[in-house]
Length: 102
Image (cartoon, rainbow, N blue to C red; front, side):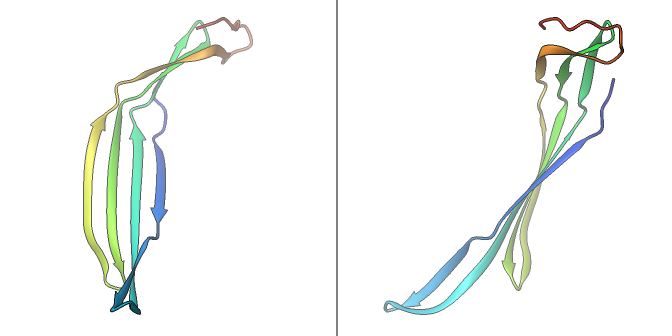
């Protein structure tokens, strides 16, 4: 049973302080954003219970910006996850399903 995609975004705001002969002369503010879009997630259902999740692909987009200039670099890659994550205990999806170890 295919599931919706999941998107996770993480943004950091590092900076570089500039100095000349030990005296501060400025600061460069940066933004680094990583977006993870996990799609192709499939619920594995057996006998009316969720027994595992199978992961498909993850699109990763990384954006590097300098304030106030804007985006200076952006890269996007797709990774095949291909992992199976069994449930520790099955999750009944209908009233008659029994919980059993995966």
